[in-house]
Length: 126
Image (cartoon, rainbow, N blue to C red; front, side):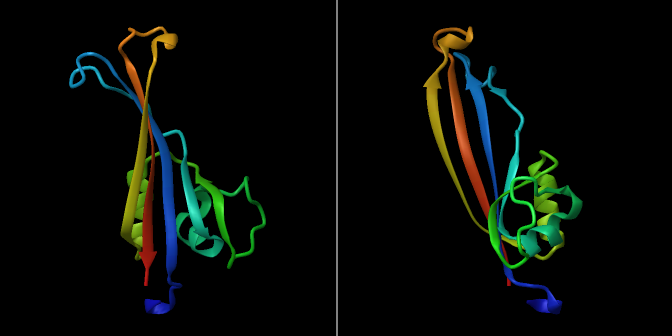
């Protein structure tokens, strides 16, 4: 890569959920992002995220090996995007899936719906 930096990809993923009641615009209840996952080569993930990278699910992974088991110690996507940008990465792709379920069993009104989503952002550095 440019300036002696390694080229490669890092994928950031997270699950989200929210509830929408009858008055959808006025009554959406968003839950915070519980965990931001990191997939990519260990050396790149450590370079970008340093001490904020939680390696407990895949300790002692060799630097040139890929992992999809790391996650970040913070829960703000903007912070992850800033770190990637500062390290010379750019967003190459993103993808999101969502599902919906009625949620009367959680004590809410019978017509409340819970939406869950999984979103991934792929970043690359040439």
